Length: 284
Image 1 (cartoon, helix red, strand yellow):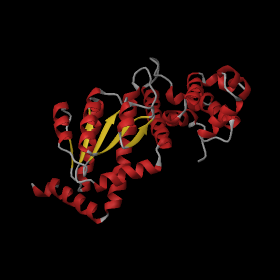
Image 2 (cartoon, rainbow, N blue to C red):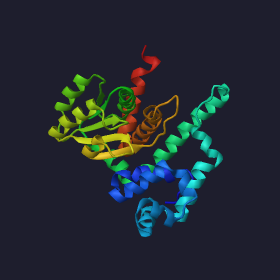
Image 3 (tube, rainbow, N blue to C red):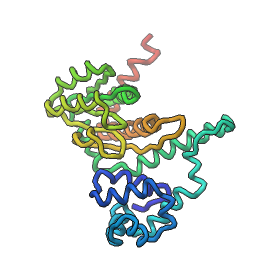
Image 4 (spheres, one colour):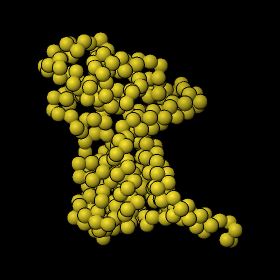
């Protein structure tokens, strides 16, 4: 896949959980010191990290580049070009239009980076698991609970049996009643939320299929899930990384919804028609 100038750091992050310890050492240095890479040779980076040149070269190939030079060019474009203002912090002197522009561009960047790390086979596995399930339950707490309720609101239209609750006790009770024929979708940006890990523990005992929607980095939740879909977001002064990721989580659910509706074909259209008729003003 051809990389554009915005995708170097996102690519590193998306692969991070699969890296060896040596690869993580290289990844951490690049993520923490991207500007240094622009002015460094492959030999210089290798010496700094105490690894072989060939190890750095293989790392570049691993994240989708032809070599160190192409990775460096992509990274330079990402952090030097005017596009960097996408993630500039809001300034007190900014006009309302400037603030709106920065927020919109940040959201666009979050969605673009998330699309870049979305793996086709994992996405298709998620679609297939949801279509095949007798029942689908959406789990989330806090801000992710709001996303779970939005997913519930969307997927009612598919005709599939779906449900969601934001109460932690009801979530555990619901999880305990699921079976291997059901599918659970757990949403957690950090992937380490106590409530979601408790729900996951219960779900593993039931045998239900589990899908985690979480941040790109390795987490307890993604380690335990059958299928993981990842979001990529950056933190600013006024919006946490978790808050920024919500737009990406919603976009993943939109894509899942459309894919499932297409796969269900007439069944999906019939369900949508029934829903529209039920809430139509004509019935009043």
